[in-house]
Image (cartoon, rainbow, N blue to C red; front, side, top):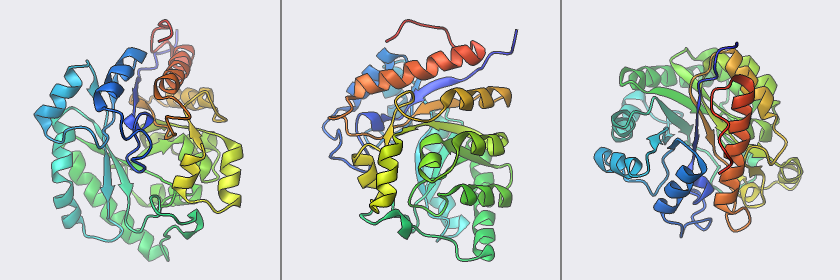
Length: 307
């Protein structure tokens, strides 16, 4: 019998309310998201802007629903500021994660990013030469060593509209950084950026310490590029969806993760308009798709009845 696939399935609250676009589900209370997520079967949540930012208060909110803290996004600016400044800036967030048992921190580079701006994606920032890449990687290595010393591994989020967006960007970042810098592999962002998610995961799976399971609608992606949409325009028009509702081969991705001994979280993170894609329904679809695939590739989770 093959070794079990020991992963947990969590979710980001963006399925209920969007941090970047408050008009999408902004009226939905956090308690609704937590109660529905637990009812569906999720074991934990990533942070969103409605969670308390004090350790004991956060622990109480999650404990009330029997949920774990998976991780939390950190808006980093190492492309523009020093390691010392970044260490000072991250201190409250790092403590919040460590105090609540999160083993990874989602690092998103927001310096010069256009992910929240009304600009076409071709205007995203780029490092101008090899020296700029190396200096950035050196700062990232030092910062990652700091978070790791506090028990939290940096999980670098390649993201549309940012410095590290394309497959070649990810390749270069992984080549220039050490193992202390983990990779957050996001199937949706990788596909949107023109990469083959399965190929790219196979290439960098040894560095993956966190996974965002996001599906895509290829027709919408094509329109986003052809019509020079901004990232948020693509989101509003349905570029992303939950696992099992798009074109990403999650069976192949999970098989790769199991083969390479991945033991972290699988996080459903699919920003959509909840008035078009109802939160509970789609969060349930994503959970059941991943749960059944996990069971098939390694019997790591029971085949519970559908939520």
